[in-house]
Picture 1 (tube, one colour):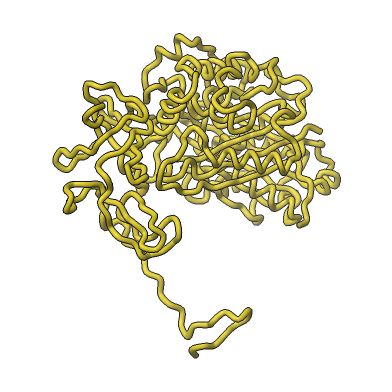
Picture 2 (cartoon, chains in turn yellow, red):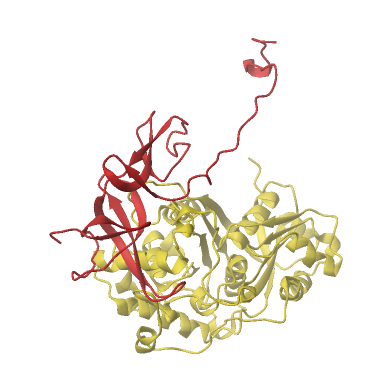
Length: 383
Length: 139
């Protein structure tokens, strides 16, 4: 199969937060303009637009792009819950790598303040949602079982949040920029035992945009070198009617396996990871899923500082979903923006020295019988 | 024209058959009365034998539509649980119960004198139209 090299040539985003006076258009239009400008291209150079969102309603993408007169070309709106933005990225990567497009714009955007607070609205048609299931309960049950099966303690769940906030304090794009202590995390309002409010990602609004280009277009249009997309993997969940190990999510294990194979690198090669820490327990489980450590030894990795600045691999240098925020459809694209900035030396106070390889990971959950509905992993190589 | 074959040798029917919608909203509740008493509703595939939670019309394992309504066991093991402090009034314990036939169900959990822990035996309780699981006798 024909396969072109694909590059992220620019990125832009607004700080995640509660932007109550901005619509989906208002959230996304500035980073869209900035990303095109930083790529050094005009709107006539764009072949296709892919837009990830879950709650934007009809024609969210077209509502945004028409504001700058970017029309006629294909605009594809993508919903895959928390994987929406990264799925849009995957679709754009497929089109360019197969030679069907040369330049694509990927927009991730979400406005969660429209719901006025509370947990993420899930499909009212789902059997378990009808029974009252909410996302914090799913992750809390993962946490209960993980703490039961391992030596990890509830303090380790708090340490994930402490690290996320420490990283977020360095990131001007983060929703939370104040550091917290283990004691503060444990004393916060309980949401779903053993998870407290500070172990849960916040509600917020956000938008991130990246421009993807083929090697050919990069040369023809004189774009910056950018970072190479070394792997782009999208998996869907597989139903299980019986017992399922909630501490070993097969969808993330299998996506990571395929992404490593596609990129020709392994966990030991990575300088940074942006992973789906929607709730603090997720980070521990994903250390194991990505092969950073063996089964049930994630807490030791965290305690030993291996996953913060100065460690083996910096996990969520942006602050992750816990500190940077998690406007659902925007998160996958924001992770790519973080990887792009880290691999091109533009990450400011949170810059990882000489970062060469980055992995980004989002899932999308809330469906009975599935661990998650979707999982997207990308691996990037510095220029 | 019965027996006609198109490209690749696939049979070409005279007229496209009409697919029917599945009335999956017709029976919503998971609790029903069976000869053995009030039990959670399950569905067993007549072809491959897979058992699933709820009233289903297609087997999620083999895709067969030959399925039967069955009563699920009233006992099982608590895989995991949480006490939910959001989304309603007060504190609501919920958990995943692995029933004795291997089917997993989400359930409200009623706490008694024994503290909840993963892998403890639990049994179905019914309170009017509400149902829950509670630690089994002997726990």
